[in-house]
Amino acid sequence: MRITEVETIVFPNPGRAFVWVLIKTDEGITGLGESTLMGRERAVAATIEHMSEMLVGEDPFRREFLWNRLFLADRRRGGAVVGSSMGGIDVALWDIQGQALGLPIHALLGGRVRDRVRCYNHTDPKSPDDVDAKFSELLDGGWTAAKFMATPSWPGDDGREVIDPGKSIRLGAEIVEAARSRVGDDFDLLLETHGRLRPVHLIEFADRIAPFHPMLVEEPTRPEAIESFRLIREKTRVPLATGERLYHRWAFQPIIENDLVDIIQPDIVHSHGLSEVKRIADYADTHLILVAPHNPQSPVNTMASLHLDFVIPNFLIQEVIWPFPAQLMELFDGGPTIEAGYADLPEEPGLGIRLNEKKAKTIGYESSPVQELRMEDGSVAEW
Image (cartoon, rainbow, N blue to C red; front, side):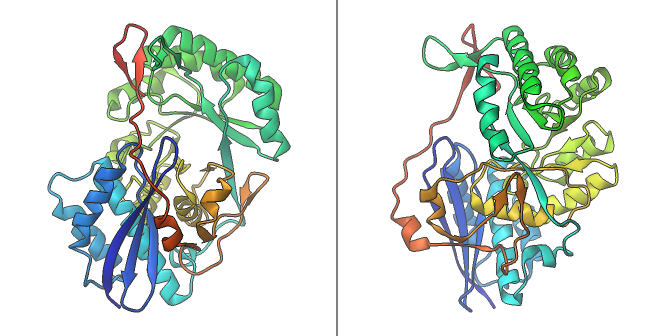
Protein backbone atom coordinates (compact mmCIF):
# COMPACT_ATOMS: atom_id res chain seq x y z
CA MET A 1 0.00 0.00 0.00
CA ARG A 2 1.23 3.49 -0.89
CA ILE A 3 0.05 7.02 -0.17
CA THR A 4 -1.18 8.71 -3.34
CA GLU A 5 -2.58 12.03 -2.11
CA VAL A 6 -2.88 14.23 0.98
CA GLU A 7 -5.76 16.72 1.00
CA THR A 8 -7.26 19.22 3.44
CA ILE A 9 -10.84 20.44 3.79
CA VAL A 10 -11.54 23.59 5.80
CA PHE A 11 -15.05 23.77 7.23
CA PRO A 12 -16.55 27.02 8.59
CA ASN A 13 -17.37 26.98 12.29
CA PRO A 14 -17.89 30.09 14.45
CA GLY A 15 -14.64 31.00 16.21
CA ARG A 16 -12.83 27.82 15.14
CA ALA A 17 -12.84 26.66 11.52
CA PHE A 18 -12.36 22.90 11.38
CA VAL A 19 -9.47 21.52 9.30
CA TRP A 20 -9.74 17.88 8.21
CA VAL A 21 -6.93 15.85 6.65
CA LEU A 22 -7.57 13.10 4.10
CA ILE A 23 -4.75 10.69 3.23
CA LYS A 24 -5.56 8.53 0.22
CA THR A 25 -3.93 5.27 -0.83
CA ASP A 26 -3.58 3.16 -3.95
CA GLU A 27 -5.75 0.46 -2.36
CA GLY A 28 -8.77 2.71 -2.03
CA ILE A 29 -8.49 3.32 1.72
CA THR A 30 -8.73 6.94 2.87
CA GLY A 31 -7.57 7.96 6.34
CA LEU A 32 -9.19 10.87 8.17
CA GLY A 33 -7.64 13.16 10.79
CA GLU A 34 -8.13 16.65 12.22
CA SER A 35 -5.72 19.61 12.20
CA THR A 36 -7.95 22.39 13.53
CA LEU A 37 -6.06 25.38 14.97
CA MET A 38 -8.16 28.32 16.08
CA GLY A 39 -7.50 31.39 13.92
CA ARG A 40 -4.65 29.73 12.02
CA GLU A 41 -6.43 27.33 9.66
CA ARG A 42 -4.81 28.78 6.52
CA ALA A 43 -1.32 28.33 7.97
CA VAL A 44 -2.10 24.73 8.89
CA ALA A 45 -3.52 23.90 5.45
CA ALA A 46 -0.41 25.34 3.76
CA THR A 47 1.91 23.40 6.09
CA ILE A 48 0.11 20.13 5.36
CA GLU A 49 0.54 20.82 1.64
CA HIS A 50 4.30 21.12 2.19
CA MET A 51 4.37 17.98 4.33
CA SER A 52 2.51 16.00 1.69
CA GLU A 53 5.66 16.05 -0.44
CA MET A 54 7.28 13.80 2.19
CA LEU A 55 4.30 11.45 2.37
CA VAL A 56 3.18 10.70 -1.18
CA GLY A 57 4.65 7.40 -2.35
CA GLU A 58 5.35 6.18 1.18
CA ASP A 59 3.93 3.14 2.99
CA PRO A 60 1.24 4.43 5.42
CA PHE A 61 1.97 1.53 7.79
CA ARG A 62 5.39 3.09 8.52
CA ARG A 63 3.69 5.49 10.88
CA GLU A 64 6.59 5.97 13.32
CA PHE A 65 9.08 6.48 10.51
CA LEU A 66 6.82 9.09 8.89
CA TRP A 67 6.20 10.84 12.22
CA ASN A 68 9.92 11.20 12.85
CA ARG A 69 10.60 12.19 9.27
CA LEU A 70 8.12 15.07 9.46
CA PHE A 71 9.16 16.13 12.96
CA LEU A 72 12.92 16.06 12.49
CA ALA A 73 12.88 17.53 9.00
CA ASP A 74 11.67 20.82 10.47
CA ARG A 75 14.76 22.29 12.13
CA ARG A 76 12.65 24.93 13.94
CA ARG A 77 10.06 22.45 15.09
CA GLY A 78 7.57 22.16 17.85
CA GLY A 79 5.06 24.98 17.38
CA ALA A 80 1.28 24.94 17.19
CA VAL A 81 1.07 25.10 13.38
CA VAL A 82 3.48 22.21 12.78
CA GLY A 83 2.07 20.25 15.71
CA SER A 84 -1.49 20.59 14.45
CA SER A 85 -0.51 19.72 10.90
CA MET A 86 1.21 16.56 12.07
CA GLY A 87 -1.65 15.80 14.46
CA GLY A 88 -4.13 15.35 11.64
CA ILE A 89 -1.67 13.39 9.52
CA ASP A 90 -0.80 11.01 12.35
CA VAL A 91 -4.45 10.19 13.15
CA ALA A 92 -5.20 9.65 9.46
CA LEU A 93 -2.36 7.12 9.30
CA TRP A 94 -3.77 5.28 12.33
CA ASP A 95 -7.15 5.31 10.59
CA ILE A 96 -5.69 3.74 7.45
CA GLN A 97 -4.01 0.96 9.41
CA GLY A 98 -7.15 0.21 11.41
CA GLN A 99 -9.30 0.04 8.30
CA ALA A 100 -6.78 -2.19 6.51
CA LEU A 101 -6.63 -4.62 9.44
CA GLY A 102 -10.33 -4.43 10.26
CA LEU A 103 -9.65 -3.21 13.81
CA PRO A 104 -10.59 -0.05 15.73
CA ILE A 105 -7.65 2.14 16.69
CA HIS A 106 -8.01 1.35 20.39
CA ALA A 107 -7.34 -2.31 19.60
CA LEU A 108 -4.11 -1.30 17.84
CA LEU A 109 -3.13 0.72 20.93
CA GLY A 110 -3.40 -2.30 23.20
CA GLY A 111 -7.11 -2.69 23.87
CA ARG A 112 -9.52 -1.07 26.28
CA VAL A 113 -8.87 -0.86 30.01
CA ARG A 114 -12.35 0.54 30.84
CA ASP A 115 -15.94 -0.01 29.76
CA ARG A 116 -16.98 3.61 29.21
CA VAL A 117 -15.44 7.08 29.16
CA ARG A 118 -16.68 9.90 31.36
CA CYS A 119 -17.04 13.24 29.55
CA TYR A 120 -17.64 16.83 30.53
CA ASN A 121 -19.53 19.48 28.62
CA HIS A 122 -19.29 23.28 28.61
CA THR A 123 -21.42 26.08 29.96
CA ASP A 124 -20.98 29.85 30.19
CA PRO A 125 -22.55 31.60 33.19
CA LYS A 126 -21.63 35.29 33.12
CA SER A 127 -22.88 35.97 36.64
CA PRO A 128 -24.30 34.07 39.62
CA ASP A 129 -27.77 34.89 38.30
CA ASP A 130 -27.05 32.78 35.17
CA VAL A 131 -26.09 29.67 37.10
CA ASP A 132 -29.49 28.11 37.69
CA ALA A 133 -30.57 28.10 34.04
CA LYS A 134 -27.16 27.09 32.67
CA PHE A 135 -26.62 24.15 35.01
CA SER A 136 -30.24 22.99 35.03
CA GLU A 137 -29.90 22.18 31.34
CA LEU A 138 -26.79 20.07 31.99
CA LEU A 139 -28.30 18.27 34.95
CA ASP A 140 -31.44 17.48 32.98
CA GLY A 141 -29.21 15.92 30.30
CA GLY A 142 -27.56 13.60 32.81
CA TRP A 143 -24.16 15.31 32.79
CA THR A 144 -22.01 14.90 35.88
CA ALA A 145 -19.29 17.46 35.08
CA ALA A 146 -18.92 20.76 33.24
CA LYS A 147 -16.29 23.39 32.53
CA PHE A 148 -16.77 27.14 32.39
CA MET A 149 -14.67 30.29 32.23
CA ALA A 150 -13.99 31.12 35.87
CA THR A 151 -12.02 34.30 35.07
CA PRO A 152 -14.79 36.11 33.18
CA SER A 153 -14.41 39.11 30.89
CA TRP A 154 -17.01 41.58 29.67
CA PRO A 155 -17.64 43.78 26.59
CA GLY A 156 -15.67 47.02 26.52
CA ASP A 157 -16.68 50.33 25.01
CA ASP A 158 -15.09 49.44 21.66
CA GLY A 159 -16.78 46.04 21.47
CA ARG A 160 -13.68 44.05 22.43
CA GLU A 161 -13.72 41.84 25.51
CA VAL A 162 -11.93 43.39 28.50
CA ILE A 163 -10.80 42.05 31.85
CA ASP A 164 -9.71 43.44 35.19
CA PRO A 165 -8.03 40.79 37.39
CA GLY A 166 -9.51 41.97 40.69
CA LYS A 167 -13.07 42.17 39.36
CA SER A 168 -12.68 38.92 37.46
CA ILE A 169 -11.48 37.05 40.55
CA ARG A 170 -14.38 38.29 42.66
CA LEU A 171 -17.01 37.61 40.01
CA GLY A 172 -15.52 34.22 39.14
CA ALA A 173 -15.51 33.10 42.77
CA GLU A 174 -19.15 34.16 43.15
CA ILE A 175 -20.09 32.11 40.08
CA VAL A 176 -18.22 29.06 41.40
CA GLU A 177 -19.96 29.33 44.77
CA ALA A 178 -23.37 29.61 43.09
CA ALA A 179 -22.58 26.68 40.80
CA ARG A 180 -21.60 24.41 43.69
CA SER A 181 -24.78 25.36 45.53
CA ARG A 182 -26.86 24.53 42.45
CA VAL A 183 -25.31 21.18 41.46
CA GLY A 184 -24.48 19.68 44.85
CA ASP A 185 -21.39 17.75 45.86
CA ASP A 186 -21.50 14.94 43.29
CA PHE A 187 -21.19 17.13 40.18
CA ASP A 188 -17.65 18.10 39.15
CA LEU A 189 -16.75 21.69 38.31
CA LEU A 190 -13.80 22.32 35.97
CA LEU A 191 -12.61 25.91 36.07
CA GLU A 192 -11.04 27.48 32.99
CA THR A 193 -8.69 30.42 33.56
CA HIS A 194 -6.93 30.51 30.12
CA GLY A 195 -3.68 31.59 31.79
CA ARG A 196 -5.17 35.06 32.15
CA LEU A 197 -4.04 35.70 35.73
CA ARG A 198 -0.59 36.40 37.06
CA PRO A 199 0.49 34.07 39.90
CA VAL A 200 -0.44 36.45 42.73
CA HIS A 201 -3.97 36.78 41.37
CA LEU A 202 -4.33 33.06 40.64
CA ILE A 203 -3.27 32.21 44.20
CA GLU A 204 -5.91 34.59 45.57
CA PHE A 205 -8.53 33.09 43.26
CA ALA A 206 -7.58 29.55 44.28
CA ASP A 207 -7.95 30.48 47.95
CA ARG A 208 -11.44 31.84 47.26
CA ILE A 209 -12.71 28.80 45.36
CA ALA A 210 -10.97 26.00 47.31
CA PRO A 211 -13.98 25.48 49.66
CA PHE A 212 -16.10 24.56 46.62
CA HIS A 213 -13.83 21.65 45.65
CA PRO A 214 -13.25 22.07 41.90
CA MET A 215 -12.08 19.01 39.97
CA LEU A 216 -9.36 21.20 38.46
CA VAL A 217 -8.21 24.72 37.68
CA GLU A 218 -7.13 24.75 34.05
CA GLU A 219 -4.15 26.74 32.77
CA PRO A 220 -3.42 28.52 36.07
CA THR A 221 -0.67 30.45 34.31
CA ARG A 222 0.90 30.75 30.87
CA PRO A 223 2.38 27.44 29.72
CA GLU A 224 5.85 28.83 29.15
CA ALA A 225 6.11 30.20 32.72
CA ILE A 226 7.48 27.08 34.44
CA GLU A 227 8.68 28.87 37.58
CA SER A 228 5.25 30.44 37.97
CA PHE A 229 3.76 26.95 38.01
CA ARG A 230 6.16 26.06 40.79
CA LEU A 231 5.11 29.11 42.86
CA ILE A 232 1.40 28.41 42.36
CA ARG A 233 1.91 24.75 43.21
CA GLU A 234 3.55 25.68 46.51
CA LYS A 235 0.87 28.19 47.48
CA THR A 236 -2.40 26.49 46.52
CA ARG A 237 -4.29 23.31 47.38
CA VAL A 238 -6.70 23.06 44.43
CA PRO A 239 -5.93 20.49 41.69
CA LEU A 240 -4.01 22.11 38.81
CA ALA A 241 -4.13 21.19 35.13
CA THR A 242 -2.41 22.34 31.96
CA GLY A 243 -1.33 21.11 28.55
CA GLU A 244 -3.49 22.35 25.69
CA ARG A 245 -0.66 24.68 24.62
CA LEU A 246 2.19 22.21 25.08
CA TYR A 247 2.92 20.51 21.79
CA HIS A 248 5.24 17.53 22.38
CA ARG A 249 6.77 15.36 25.10
CA TRP A 250 9.73 17.67 25.66
CA ALA A 251 7.42 20.59 26.44
CA PHE A 252 5.62 18.41 28.99
CA GLN A 253 8.88 17.13 30.46
CA PRO A 254 9.52 19.84 33.11
CA ILE A 255 5.84 19.91 34.09
CA ILE A 256 5.76 16.15 34.63
CA GLU A 257 9.23 15.64 36.11
CA ASN A 258 8.68 18.38 38.70
CA ASP A 259 5.11 17.31 39.51
CA LEU A 260 3.86 20.85 38.87
CA VAL A 261 0.28 19.82 38.05
CA ASP A 262 -2.08 17.01 38.98
CA ILE A 263 -3.62 16.63 35.52
CA ILE A 264 -2.25 17.15 32.02
CA GLN A 265 -4.45 18.11 29.06
CA PRO A 266 -2.67 17.38 25.78
CA ASP A 267 -4.70 17.87 22.61
CA ILE A 268 -4.24 15.13 19.99
CA VAL A 269 -4.58 17.74 17.25
CA HIS A 270 -2.02 20.22 18.58
CA SER A 271 0.42 17.81 20.24
CA HIS A 272 1.56 16.12 17.03
CA GLY A 273 -1.07 13.39 17.00
CA LEU A 274 -2.26 10.27 18.74
CA SER A 275 1.21 8.68 18.67
CA GLU A 276 2.80 11.52 20.62
CA VAL A 277 -0.05 11.99 23.09
CA LYS A 278 0.03 8.28 23.94
CA ARG A 279 3.74 8.69 24.73
CA ILE A 280 3.02 11.77 26.85
CA ALA A 281 0.26 9.95 28.75
CA ASP A 282 2.52 6.99 29.49
CA TYR A 283 5.24 9.36 30.71
CA ALA A 284 2.76 11.17 32.98
CA ASP A 285 1.68 7.86 34.48
CA THR A 286 5.19 7.32 35.84
CA HIS A 287 4.49 10.35 38.08
CA LEU A 288 0.90 9.28 38.82
CA ILE A 289 -0.37 12.31 36.89
CA LEU A 290 -3.83 11.98 35.35
CA VAL A 291 -4.80 12.81 31.75
CA ALA A 292 -7.86 14.79 30.65
CA PRO A 293 -7.41 15.36 26.90
CA HIS A 294 -8.24 18.80 25.55
CA ASN A 295 -10.81 18.71 22.73
CA PRO A 296 -12.97 21.67 21.68
CA GLN A 297 -12.79 20.21 18.16
CA SER A 298 -15.02 18.46 15.66
CA PRO A 299 -16.35 14.86 15.77
CA VAL A 300 -13.11 13.70 14.12
CA ASN A 301 -10.81 14.59 17.01
CA THR A 302 -13.50 13.57 19.48
CA MET A 303 -13.31 10.05 18.05
CA ALA A 304 -9.50 10.07 18.14
CA SER A 305 -9.59 11.20 21.78
CA LEU A 306 -12.01 8.44 22.75
CA HIS A 307 -9.75 5.76 21.29
CA LEU A 308 -6.95 7.08 23.51
CA ASP A 309 -9.18 7.40 26.58
CA PHE A 310 -10.21 3.77 26.47
CA VAL A 311 -6.63 2.48 26.58
CA ILE A 312 -4.65 4.69 28.99
CA PRO A 313 -4.85 3.69 32.68
CA ASN A 314 -4.34 7.26 33.95
CA PHE A 315 -7.33 8.76 32.12
CA LEU A 316 -9.56 11.12 34.14
CA ILE A 317 -12.24 12.75 31.98
CA GLN A 318 -12.76 13.80 28.34
CA GLU A 319 -13.66 17.27 27.07
CA VAL A 320 -16.42 17.36 24.44
CA ILE A 321 -18.58 19.97 22.75
CA TRP A 322 -21.98 18.30 22.77
CA PRO A 323 -24.21 17.97 20.91
CA PHE A 324 -22.69 18.75 17.54
CA PRO A 325 -24.96 20.71 15.18
CA ALA A 326 -27.10 18.50 12.95
CA GLN A 327 -25.75 20.16 9.78
CA LEU A 328 -22.22 19.17 10.84
CA MET A 329 -23.09 15.55 11.63
CA GLU A 330 -24.78 15.24 8.24
CA LEU A 331 -21.29 15.30 6.73
CA PHE A 332 -20.26 12.09 8.52
CA ASP A 333 -21.02 8.42 8.68
CA GLY A 334 -20.43 7.22 12.22
CA GLY A 335 -19.21 9.30 15.11
CA PRO A 336 -19.21 9.44 18.88
CA THR A 337 -22.08 8.10 20.96
CA ILE A 338 -22.47 10.01 24.22
CA GLU A 339 -25.37 9.64 26.63
CA ALA A 340 -25.76 11.10 30.13
CA GLY A 341 -22.15 12.23 30.12
CA TYR A 342 -20.53 8.91 29.12
CA ALA A 343 -19.14 7.82 25.75
CA ASP A 344 -19.44 4.33 24.30
CA LEU A 345 -16.54 2.31 22.92
CA PRO A 346 -15.95 2.92 19.17
CA GLU A 347 -16.24 -0.45 17.44
CA GLU A 348 -15.85 0.25 13.72
CA PRO A 349 -12.46 -0.30 12.03
CA GLY A 350 -10.00 2.55 12.17
CA LEU A 351 -11.19 5.85 13.55
CA GLY A 352 -14.84 4.85 13.18
CA ILE A 353 -16.02 7.97 11.36
CA ARG A 354 -16.08 8.72 7.63
CA LEU A 355 -16.35 12.15 5.97
CA ASN A 356 -18.56 12.81 2.95
CA GLU A 357 -15.90 14.67 0.98
CA LYS A 358 -18.15 15.74 -1.86
CA LYS A 359 -20.71 17.31 0.43
CA ALA A 360 -18.08 18.94 2.68
CA LYS A 361 -16.43 20.61 -0.31
CA THR A 362 -19.66 22.34 -1.35
CA ILE A 363 -19.77 24.41 1.85
CA GLY A 364 -18.19 27.83 1.56
CA TYR A 365 -15.50 29.03 3.94
CA GLU A 366 -14.37 32.47 5.11
CA SER A 367 -11.32 33.10 7.26
CA SER A 368 -11.92 33.08 11.02
CA PRO A 369 -11.21 36.31 12.94
CA VAL A 370 -8.53 36.21 15.60
CA GLN A 371 -10.05 36.61 19.08
CA GLU A 372 -8.55 39.23 21.39
CA LEU A 373 -8.81 40.31 25.02
CA ARG A 374 -7.77 43.68 26.45
CA MET A 375 -7.18 45.06 29.91
CA GLU A 376 -9.43 47.95 30.90
CA ASP A 377 -6.64 50.42 30.08
CA GLY A 378 -6.49 49.11 26.50
CA SER A 379 -3.34 46.98 26.79
CA VAL A 380 -3.37 43.44 25.41
CA ALA A 381 -4.24 40.57 27.75
CA GLU A 382 -3.88 36.81 27.46
CA TRP A 383 -7.00 35.61 25.65
